[in-house]
Length: 128
Image (spheres, helix red, strand yellow):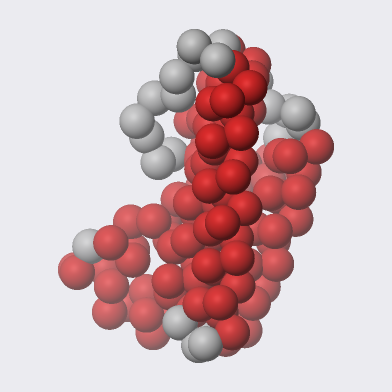
């Protein structure tokens, strides 16, 4: 396994998704902005997973699980936020959650959470 190639794969995907999330936000698709924001963090954590553990990351979307597996030194506040972002993945994918999540995704809600996603993403990148 070419470790650097795998790390690059995850972070290139995260960068691409970050652009897509920004486009979704700017076009008023707030729920999809946050869904893609979850993917940004997931891919970044998987990139660090490869670097730290020199292994293929597990097929999970759980951000807290990934952060714990790589012994990322996160604060309780960061852990709480990652747990909340996990819900963006579920609530956008499954129809029984979509309607409620769509109503919750105001511009203000999405802006605050997307800004936090970007801050956490930058911090994860710094862990490389």
